[in-house]
Amino acid sequence: MNNLGGADLNLLVVLEALLAERHVSRAAVRLNRSQPAVSHALARLRILLNDPLLVRRGGRLEPTTRAMEIAPQLAEALGRMRHLLAPAGFDPGTERRTFRLGMSDYGAAVMLPALLPLLRAQAPHVDLVVSQASREVMAAEVVDGETDLAFGVFPDPDQALYVDRLFEERFACLADAESLASRQGMDMATYLARPHALVALRADSESEVDSALAALGLKRRLCLVLPHWSVAPDLIAGTDLVLTIARRILPSRPEEKGLRIFTPPFDIPPFGFQQIWHRRRDGDPAHQWLRRQIKDLLTA
Image 1 (cartoon, rainbow, N blue to C red):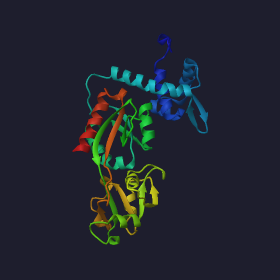
Image 2 (tube, one colour):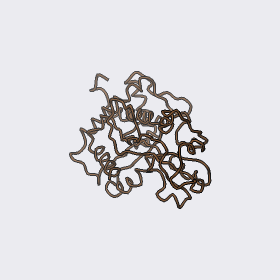
Image 3 (cartoon, rainbow, N blue to C red):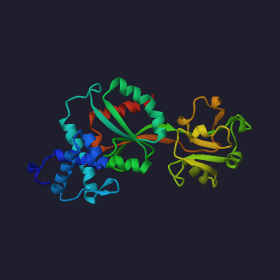
Image 4 (cartoon, rainbow, N blue to C red):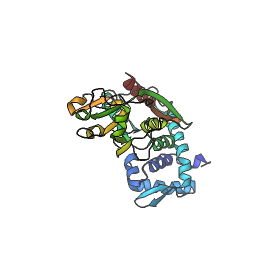
C-alpha cells in the first residue's frame, strides 16, 4: 500500500462496500457492478494487502482482524476524498446520496414523520437506510463508518464522535383509565403495588426508571419487557399494567383509547436525545445539511 502508483484506488471503494455488506452480491448491487467484478476486485485486494480480508462463515463473509483494523481508516480516507472531489457548493435538490441512520423505534416515531416529507420536497434524490441496535452498537457503527448518524442517549461517547443534544425528554406514566381511582394518577404505594411494563432491548438493560427507584431503595415488579417503544402504549388498555416511558411516544389523545397519562409519583431525571456523528463526517456539506434539518425539526 506504500506504493500508491501501482495501486488501483478504486479497489478501496469495493473494500468499503464489502466491509459494510459482508456479502459479494449485495456489495455488487451497492456499487452497481457485476458479482464477478466484485469477486475479482476482492481477489486483487487480498494480494494488495496480503490478507484474506473477508472469510466465509455460514452464509456470510466475516472480516479478518486486519480488515477490522483497516475499516475506520478506510472510511475516514474515503470520506475525505469524497469531500475533496465533491462539486463546490451543495444543492439538496440535486444531491444523490444515501444516508445510513441508526435509531430505535422511539427515534423513528419522533423524527421520521417530519423528516421524510421534508426530504421528499427538498432533497428527492437523498435516500435513507434506517437500522436499529443498542446504543453501544450504534455508537460503534458510527465509529467504524457503517452508520452516518445515530440517534439516542449516549452517556459516554467515543472521543472520535461529535454529540449534538436535540431536545430534553421527560418521563410520564400511562395506565388504563378505569383502573385508576384518581384522575391525578397514583401515589408511590399504589405505583409499586401494580405490575409494570418496560421498553428495553434486553431484560437486563439499564433503565432510568429503575435506577431512580433504586436510589430510593425501592423496586417495582416487571411483568412485561419488550423492545418496541411504539407498540407499548397499545398494550396497556384493559390491563392493570403501568407503563413509565418517554413522554413524546405517548398518544396525544389517550382518552380515546381508554388510557390516562399522569406524572410519576417520584422524580426521574430527564434525558437528552442526541445525534452523534464521526469527526470525519463533520465537514461534509450534505451531512451538515441533514444534521441541521433534523435539529430544526426537533427543536421547533
